[in-house]
Image (cartoon, rainbow, N blue to C red; front, side, top):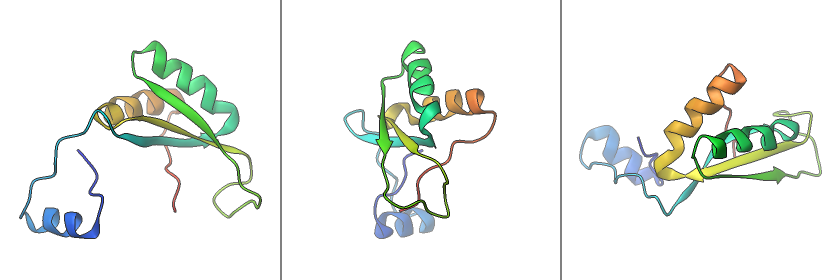
Amino acid sequence: MAVPRTFREAWDWLLGRDELPPPDPDRTVEAAWVPAWQGRMITDELIADGIPAVVVDDFGINLTMYTREPMARIFVTENRRAEAEAVITEILGHEPRHRGL
């Protein structure tokens, strides 16, 4: 299921007014926010499973209440997000986290 991008899309979806557009294979989305030491290993597994993925180190000057270690973000195409999250869940043993903005 695609995630609504704006408040209006979410509101229309909740009220059943509009259908969400199908996942766009040209759009990238975050699949997981993981510790940096796990990012490359998970990305290699996703690529081995045929899911195109990239990892980006999430550098922050200050440690936040969300994390106490360097983190990485894994991005995949929107149409492969569910598959990627299933593989990541299998590797981690729990649902992947996403970075709150």
